[in-house]
Length: 444
Image (spheres, one colour):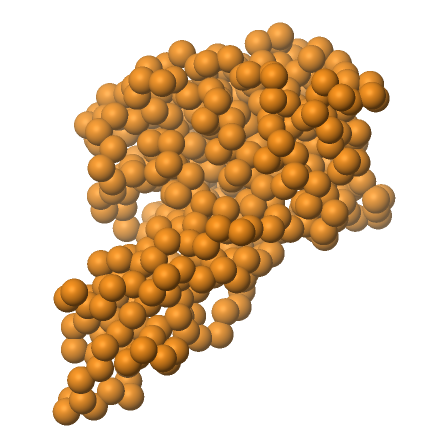
């Protein structure tokens, strides 16, 4: 037995070393802590990195948004870039929250439940990371402020189980393609779990692809709906603030879910975060503006006008989200009528143009138009490719994280001659195709 544990630890250390080498640098406003794997009973058997982004200019944080990847080596590596996502950063910036991206060092085909059930040590490490990052960032409130949890696949199992264990700390939870396993797998020594009443006061959205058992039963992930449906039914029967949103275009990939998830979190955080930054006690979710929709149906109505069985209906926080939900259920998209803000900090060094741009909260960033001397001259990226769902600047991957290497806001005018002088401006284009006003010219 001892030799097996030693071999496992050697393997995990090799995986950890490889993962560390591929991590993007964590320079302020990014910070990172790393923990080695443990062979002690009840502790986390995998190494893990936690990378956090702090919104510039925020003196005291109001919460932490956690973007938790799913099972498997590929998903774990995808988690390395979660905190660098410009679109999720826009949500965090608006609500003065940190954005935290865990990355577990789980080898391929290893047991995912050894981290995605928090009781196997990942809960302890998560809480330790918040404490250690609070010290590293000199933001002591990071250890105590509320959480907004997003999880995919095994990450949804993790987020859903944390919902059962820490409902008083969670402002909202989005479970993509997963659910808390109330009855553990046969090989687990952990006890079954119940849904506490306090968890029903937390807004929750169960989100999955239609091919995960909703309309197709032969998909590899068709069992997801078999787990989501009873969880939704039990929570909603208790009056819980829970919904189900089905992507009509996808299976287990995240598709376009962020265009509903981010506005949904926006509504929930607006309603629930404490008024005073740094405080821990969440506000109760208001019910007067809620809308309801039939399960697997898009026709939402104000809760007071709903004629069906309210305790079997999808719960939605307000009219804005109900309308976005109806669009998403129909074709997997959410429309947008608000253009992004213009880029700033435009600088020209030789033929090198750089800039900064905040992501549009509704639709993120698809790319940039470069104007030279008042006319469109180039696009960045030149040929968008590689995104799951809508094409976006950071090449969104299967796990809803940016694809490495991280895209840069940079353009080099290779056609400009030393004897020529040109003026440049930059325009942001969001994923819905809306354009910002042009930026100011460099030096103006």
